Image (cartoon, rainbow, N blue to C red):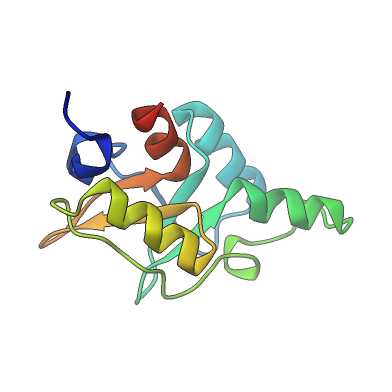
Length: 124
């Protein structure tokens, strides 16, 4: 049996990569996440950023109105990325070291997103 930590990230990443603009509201972001059954969106800024369901939860817990808060107000800027041929063991180590749960997968272009949930499911 093959060691799951040696699986390449391209085998488990979510595709296509779902994106959102920085000026979208958190309501728009959560609607997109729910429709796609994902928990993070790539934000189309330069350099790219990311907004996650945790970012939205934090804003709501602070009493902020998701109809009034823009993605740019809560997103993580200048995110780490991984190539599609990186092994899951290395991706898991990156997530642990950086304290993150999502990584965009990039080759010449943005290809998809890998999450800690994807890795856990594959290694289980």
